[in-house]
Length: 382
Image (tube, rainbow, N blue to C red):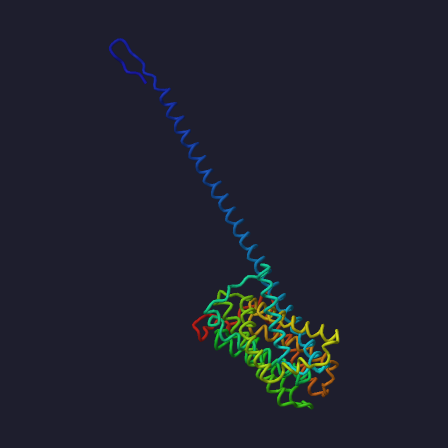
């Protein structure tokens, strides 16, 4: 571009400026492109990180679910084995050796729990709060339920044959289910209800042909059923609401019931009967007696553990699954069982119903039941 001035003309060259402008525009375009590319890369990296984080959370959730499943099944199996062992040992001590006092045996089991847990706390193997003025109020009525459940359970074991004892113990299932609904607001699914009702039906059939009827034994077992149902439900409630913990519940239940159990032994004369028993010099009897006492502690621990990871109803039915084994073995232990086909049919119905409940409860991935999502009487979804 040129501008004439008279005869002389001066030419103003704007090319460098235009080139600079063009270069600036190109640079801006390059910068914008780079900026947009950087944003796209950042977005892509962020998306990958989110996906990775989501996968990690899913994997952690699956691992946690698997660990919880193992704890549920493991605690249930541990409780079943413990319950089976103590039932057989108690029957051997009380019936085969004709030990005169189930009250004294319950006192021995309370003593074993106190000694084991007290020593465990001193050695720092277990922890639980120290005794305070309000400890009894915090765990009430568990000590009474725990103590009398042990006493009447041993009384029923002594008075009845193991197959008949196992059949009658199944009535505790229905009681537990009803108490869970009333106290905990837990509404069982339809499949659970069907399996429980089938188990009760089988128990009724088995109990309808009892050829060795014992009214005292029947009374003890029915009281034990009610106490077992109450114990499971209240243990679950105390574990959820109290800071005492499972070891504290076990220790203080035994501690608070020791003196009442000792007085009961003294008043009834069972303490003297036990002291005068003639087989204390028999090593085999002493070993089984001590094993029964220690198994009382192990049973208490396994019961609380199973209830903590599962439910009171699951704990009760695992106990009844154990009773299936006890039933068949009890035909040969104690020598006080009278076989009948009707009893055998009822037992097998209960076996099938128990297996159905086990499948419904412990399968890892089950479809949500509509009944389970209904609001309970306590205003919660269960």
